[in-house]
Image (cartoon, rainbow over all chains, first blue to last red; front, top):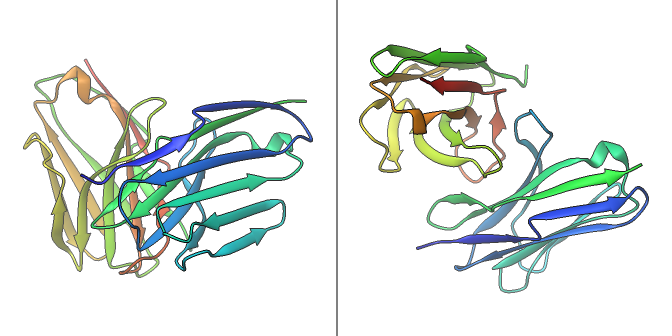
Length: 108
Length: 112
């Protein structure tokens, strides 16, 4: 069945360092979405990627969708304490499945 | 209004109780969802409603019974739950098609 894997599970960085999380699907996706969930909060939509090879930027965040539409990445440049939370990808093939998430913590 | 409102925020229930979770949105979204999220895990899809009709049931046990009374409301009726059903239950809504989902704050359910 459709599976979406996400690595790493945890990432602890010094404030100002960069951060990247990777998402890999067992099947070709029609699109992929990224969500952020703060501790004790609910998932909040960040972005959706649809096209093969697509790259989108939101300030310090850069999102990529692989050429084969089976993988994606989120890169944060110069992390800030407000970036703390769990980042989930959610891939849509026959249905939408959330990746396992990457929990980002930051040392001030 | 870009909010999805869920009530109650917290619920403690016994295994013989019957309770309901409620979700409301006024964004005109015609797709609504129930997710279950255990601690440190991703949200797991339970049910999807499209145009007030159940379109997806992810093999959820019958002790969970969804209901969509109208295009703005979504309920989840709970009966004879087990302690392992304790989790954060999230409601979400979206426009139909492959679009972003707006999540509510969730109901944190504890079954004792």
